[in-house]
Structure formats: structure tokens, C-alpha cells
Image (cartoon, rainbow, N blue to C red; front, side):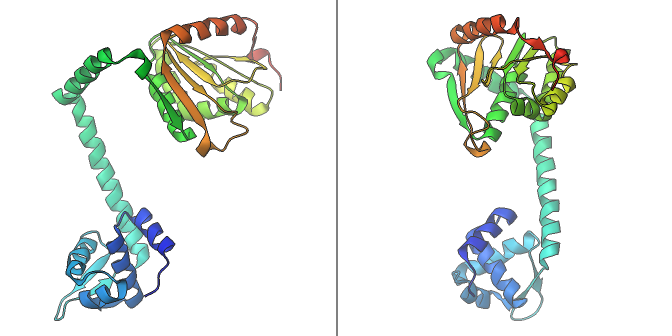
Length: 272
């Protein structure tokens, strides 16, 4: 059986199987019905492992064992396999979510928070920093930082960045607004998309227009997340952000922002 390695790697990624499992499964699909020994030879998998692998595939819903001697295995149609895997993934995910939710009612989370609090107190302030690569990772950390805000969130972003934040972070902003956190956002509002995003945010944040180009977020005058590249010039996969817990620099930057903020035009007075 000749199957390209790239194809096997795709099967491993999509169906969450190991290398031996995808080899045996692909071999069985090519035969329809076969014995463990035959599949071992076709797939170039050690015969001593083939029975364990087929048992695993059977439990996962990829194959059916045919009664008789010798024991043979039947390939389940791929469309049916996809449906079974989807169902299993959902069941596993739901169970994982329930387990994590149940932690809120146990002492485990309290003990973890105590460990973290005590640990942070021992950390040198210069160690409370990090970098994130990829816009997905960057926004995950940005959401975490913003979610913990107690007083203020200050954001300077691009027109495209404003649209992204409406799409991905508006529920977080709404929660902060309910807690009394002041949210201020400035961005170039020269496009209809940017103005619409600003209008969508008017109930949870004050948005103003700026001609400046920068990408940063300050939380409570203590934590700073800033992006080092122009989002128009970089693919999302290669976007880079820096997180720093630095009250000294963050508060200084917020003071400079305050001076610029006073000169910025409110979104309601801007026309595209």
C-alpha cells in the first residue's frame, strides 16, 4: 500500500490518531475487509501491535470486528467515521467543561489561587513580562488582561484593530462596563467600517478619532500590552505583542495618552 506521508499526517491531525492507527486504518479502507496479519503486512506495522491498534480503532468507531476464524475487520464508511468522531469530540469536550466548572465549588481552585498569589509576591517585577506570537495568542492574552481590570482600560488601535476588538472582545467590555470600569478607545475612524464599529461600542466605551498609528492597551495604569508591528504589514500568524506588568511605565504612558485624548474628536462628530 502506497500512501503519501502528508496524507497520513492529515489523518492524524483531523482524526486524532497515532501513526500506527492511521496506517492500519488506511490499509483496511483499501481492502474493505482484512485480518490483523494482512493489515500488518500492508501497512508495515509490527504484527505484535496490530491487534492492540485494531482494538483501539474499534473502540473509537473506525472498524467493526467480524466474527469467525480467522478474525477479520471491516472498515466503517469514512462519512460515518466523521460523524462518530464529531460526536465523541463533543461528548469529551462537554465532560471536560463540566469538570472545569466543578472546580469553582472545590478547594482546589482556592488553593491554586493561593499558590499563585504567594508565588507572584516572590517574583521580581522584571520577570512579569512576556511576548506573544500570532494574533490568536495575542488576543487571548489581551482578553485575559482586560478581563481583570478594576478601574480603567485604555486602548489605542488601528481601524482594523477596532473592528477586530468589537468582534472578539465586546462581551468582555460589556462585563467591565457593568462593574464600573471606564473604557476609552481611540483609532483612525476614516472608514465606514471603523465608524460602524465605534457606534457598536458607544454603550460600553467612549471612542474617539486619532490620526496617529499605534497599537497598545493599558489596564489600571499597571499592565501594558503593545503590538510591535503594523497590522496592515504583517500576516496574523506573525503578529507580535509584548505584555509587561510595569506600573511605572504604564502610568507614564497613560498620562501622555490623557493629553492626546483631550484633543481627539468624539466618534459621533466624525464623518467617513
